[in-house]
Image (cartoon, rainbow, N blue to C red; front, side, top):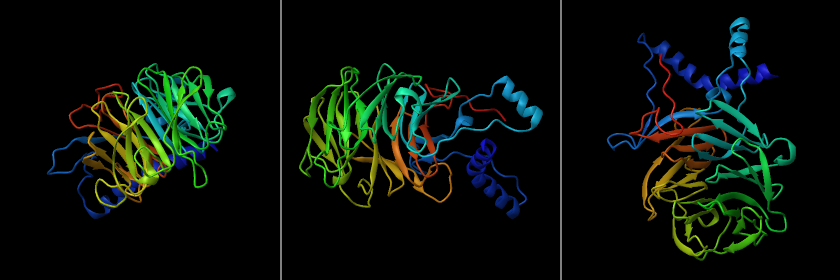
Length: 367
């Protein structure tokens, strides 16, 4: 089974590229040109971001041990790769990329600089039933929302289980979590449902698990929610909630008061159709994933559209999405975008940044 899984993963990852090479080889005698990563926006606009890499499994970060290298050389059989099944959300801190996998019922850690692939939350007291939203605190603690258990599990940076809070009495359908910059408070999105009135954000004390505040109720009025989906907190502790059923983003002050909103339903640039994920970078730019558009749009802090990245396609290629979900931006401005259908995390870096720079920087492999 391990060998079969490995073969399927390799075929899934390389078939589009091999197919392209075959077609080019059949159509011309010229050598296949080297891969040129796409940039965004396209010319003649000034480029802002460039595709860097995709994270799909252990082979993307983990370095083989001496024993594994010897075994592969002696037998010609590579070590089986561990891969994402159906990723949902992503959180990044200092080169550590944490991904929830709803089908595998666990969290996957891509430790880029440490060259490690770690699975956790799939056994023991911290075992997850259906992990969805995820975030990290300034101390490196990892907060994971369990939709089925209606609780938030907290792990250390390496996946060791620490504690959990939340219950079915407090939460109806928890889907995402964000933590204040000082690490004291957790804000949990309760998306509710057709018959539920729990369309809101619940504020918790991170250490005691005590409910401190309820933000919002089911409404289309400013400050109200209809199927809120995801949440993010900026460097000023302002709270951004993706209010998916109202097709808008709402911003709240650190104490939970409504501050600002933007967005409406539609198919034009700057509008929303099936908004799924939200992130905010250090400069206050807002990133919104949309499953219908198969891309993410970037707005300034006034809600004005700056640009978008990604498009829909049938094959797993750079910048191509089919079922996008979560998104995050790290300390250096790299963007991490989840696609559930292709089971990958697409990474885009600021155009002026070298591939080797930053917490997630890795020097390119020389041919």
